[in-house]
Structures are given as C-alpha cells and as structure tokens.
Image 1 (spheres, rainbow, N blue to C red):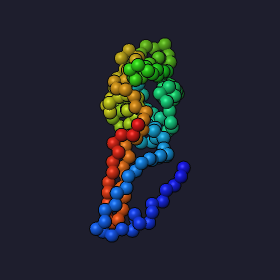
Image 2: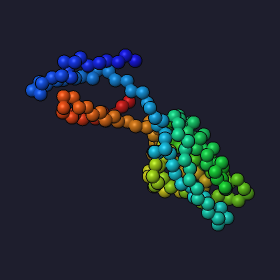
Image 3: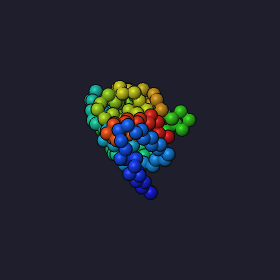
Length: 173
C-alpha cells in the first residue's frame, strides 16, 4: 500500500490559520479476529438422572463463517459434555442457529441451559441476549440473528496543530 506523507506546510501552520484535511480513501487491515477472548464464553448446565454438571465453554479465537462456528461450537460442546452430543445448524433465511442435544446414554433428555450472562460472553455470536436460556425437549433456537462481524466502528483522534479533533465513524460495511 502506498504511504502518503503530509506536506510540511500543513503540519507547520500558525495558530490563526485553519487547515482542512479530507480523508478520501482509507484501508485498514483487520488486526484481530472477530471472535477473540473478549467475546467467546458461556456456561453450560446439564442435568440427567438428577445429576447436574456445570462447565464453561470458550470458543477458540478465530475468523469463522457461520457454518465453521456451528461445527466448532458443536464439537466443543460434545467433547466437553458428560451427558449430551450437540449439533448446531444455521438457517440462512432467518439468520438463527438451532442447537440440538442428543443423550449420549439411554437416558432421556432432562435439562440443559446456557448462561450467556458472563464476562466476555459469546451471546451475540450465537444469536442470544445476555441472559440464561434453557433448552426445550433437546432443542434451542437462537432468539436473534447471529452476529460474526466483530467491531463496526472506528475512533480516530489526531492532534493537528496542537488542537485535538475527534472523529467517529459509526458504521463500517
């Protein structure tokens, strides 16, 4: 990428001069994953035969599409779970995930809940509010569209000519 250096007359102006700079084009490299250690956690509570097991899930940081995330979370849940095997499917029309739990034993489904009301919650990634949600008959459907976009705003601060200017771009497609 070409680098542009401001002409020195723009940087060395007298206090009574007004300088206008227009940003015509900007390319920013994404320097972090949309899913990272700040948005990848939830707690799972499973009950079968009156035994309750509680464990934490931390989605491995990365740059996933909706299908890769479904596979990653399903595998992590299944490998960590004592009682259930999980699968996640993505509905491309609604933008919702359906999470299905199947008993690993002959015992029937009893109770599962996901607690997204935790620090660094993965609730937006999977399409839920920041609350605890319970399965119904082994199935849980997200309540909102899943969001894997990561950050959607940039804040730029400059100290041009000794005066601070703040610029905020509210949406980045």
